[in-house]
Image (cartoon, rainbow, N blue to C red; front, side, top):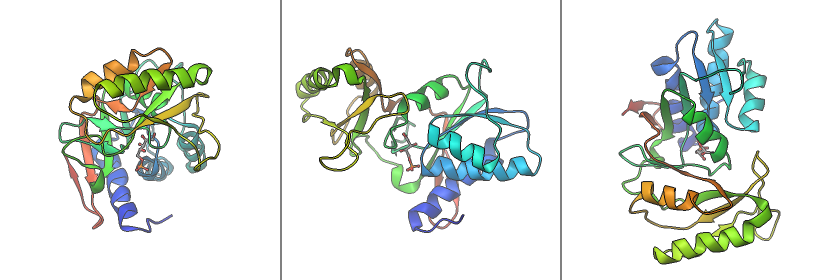
Length: 235
Ligand code: 5RP
């Protein structure tokens, strides 16, 4: 499989560069979700075919299926105590490495797997790098039982902070509700600009019914930025 668009080339450059830069024999790896992470997983499959000895814990059923297809051996968080490294994408990343994740609806497993890892490296194309997080809608995972009332609680918090009401994520306008790999729903918050991501992360996760949100601060240790030219930069 080859990257087709300019952005896809940048994603390929970032995801594939992670192998040589970070992956070593014997490592236990967290396998991220999304198109950039999937370039990493495909390249990892090729490295495994050439003798690299690693195991991975996938952050979504989609990544699990791809890893099985390309021959990356899998394990679980039940079977391993810690992971050495997680490689995962982001929807936005600022210059301090704070991220918005969950555009692909996988934020809960992504956060758990990153938390179980000694190191996390974000793989992003150059369009993801921002000065201030918030242009990308912030995904918030909520339990279906109370999603209407939880959405109202989120709306009250966001209203106090000067933000608009958040929306339930649907597959298409007026279509089916998006359901995550854990059977939950997603509320997307349109914030524009987030002044204090760490504070907002804590405030959101205190709301009953919120399972997790897509603000990942203090999690990425480094980032690989890919460019359409096929080059990459590590920060
Ligand atoms: C999925 C994620 C992805 O990492 C994020 O959406 C980036 O995806 P892509 O690499 O396709 O741009 O958080 O929940």
